[in-house]
Image (cartoon, rainbow, N blue to C red; front, side, top):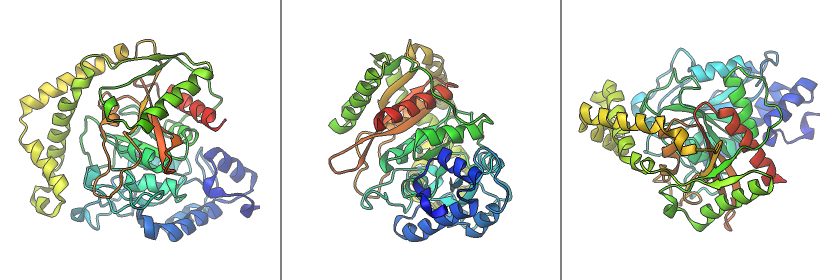
Length: 422
């Protein structure tokens, strides 16, 4: 019975039903994913550490919890007890933490099985990992959660944890043709990760679909399995101040999603970005650089060993004084207090995830600005695959909700995916 289905491309709901019905075992799921890693990861480089023995041992326990038996990957800035956590940097080579990150522990408590650690840009920043896009190995997979996006897209994990300070979950998801979810700031635990910029740092996840991400969110929040979706709220089409950076293909994907939602009965309104929100870029950059430089003070003696891209960010932060930092923090606080005004009558915003398909080359991880605004405002956001370019590369749209409206956001994303497939 275990060979009758393609378990590597099955949803979490399908896998859980099959496990409960005895149609597949946890061990078989783990072995299928380990075999795929052995087959493909030599070329892709999604994993920096695979714990085959640990995954096999975990698979011998009884199936229990919302994610019982589901194999997943963990970005290598999040601690997993007994596994290396090297932050994508030579200065953390061989570092093995004794405890799990809070997010990892929560998922283990829900029965999920860790396959290994996925590649990250150094310190979850801009110095790229040695990971390629599984859809086109000459293109970036995005970052900084590069390995998590590539692993899911290549069938090497059902889902994978990532982190997002700017756009590090949604961008890899978009470029690799899968789904990426950044919850409301603070909703998922951040213990057990090296801070990048604590005003923005958020643990998120990448999976093949919004449906799967709803399962992961439910597990992380100790909620029941996702149920039926509700009525679509008012959708606000938000063409931000960066709209002129979009290719015709990316802009067209947003318009196509608008049409699909409208035909499904949703009221879709144009919602221009309110004055002032476009001015947050500089304030965000100041806060980000100041906090990153402070968080690296612990290894100041090792800065000559880290990569130039990381050194540049840390150096920039050291040139910023505390008063300048606080002025920018206050400006961001004012903007966050005005989020309700930005949304108006809309329950969810529809906008672009990335300017275009994954760029050629592996030296950069892509433009984060379309994702950064919503991270800055601490809103939950999700990247949903929506169509393909003539080259076959995936396009993506982004949905955003008010803080603490994660369930509504995931509900709308699930419905958009169903409409896309219908």
